[in-house]
Length: 253
Ligand code: G
Ligand code: G
Ligand code: MN
Ligand code: NA
Image 1 (cartoon, rainbow, N blue to C red):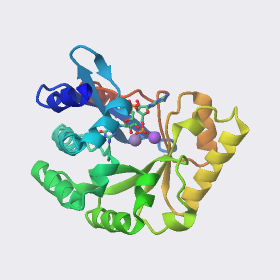
Image 2: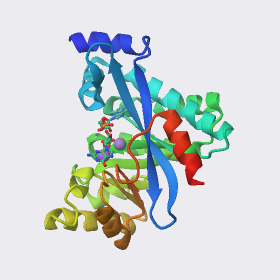
Image 3: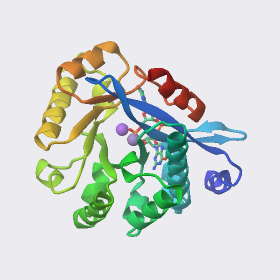
Image 4: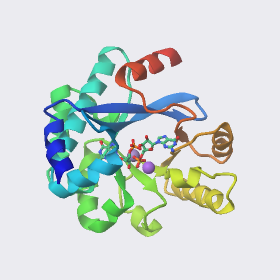
């Protein structure tokens, strides 16, 4: 694969970068963290979405190197923010292959130590299918991450098929409602019902719940009135480069 070969060079050529999408706690009206999103600027093709290249990176094993790069750079940014007096939590997406590495907790620990950042400022996002593939291995990895006090969120929640009885066996902190349900929230009765069910499920499991892809004031208002804790999406902020992100945070305090 041509793109796979170019992806192999992308780290060395400094074509990868990170952007940061702020997350808002609705009640407190405070930024509670940000999701780290990977970007690839190809010299000829321009920007290529991670939705396109992450699967290639998974299939070729390149995701190990790229995932390590993301973690290292995200932790470096947490440390840089702390130096500027900004205490901000960053959430990193883990790929399926990364999550299956049995030494994942140790490698995260060593990255955190080398940047001297407190574990409470790091969150990992994993999907339901990553949990359900091998439940006992997933529990083992998550428990080790939890012992290290890393925060754990389930991404794209509602699109997989995890059951309530399984979910309570995992040491989770938050559910992220997939943006496909938020898109037509209030307008579509089914999406509205699913969103309310996820919020109620999160509450009964004592998990924090965040809605993704919130684009309108109406969606935010509905979520606020129905006890959703946090929102992420273009309505609050698009993903920002590091300079824009720190400017955004400084303007809010
Ligand atoms: O930011 P964007 O909408 O382009 O992201 C598209 C997809 O790529 C999303 O599913 C997102 O979770 C995933 N993604 C973004 N950044 C990363 C990353 O650093 N690692 C992994 N594994 N996936 C990512
Ligand atoms: O799968 P995951 O949830 O990690 O993907 C996050 C993706 O959603 C990112 O690529 C980000 O660019 C995108 N995104 C973030 N906010 C919005 C939004 O309000 N609307 C839409 N359509 N996409 C969004
Ligand atoms: Mn995500
Ligand atoms: Na998502």
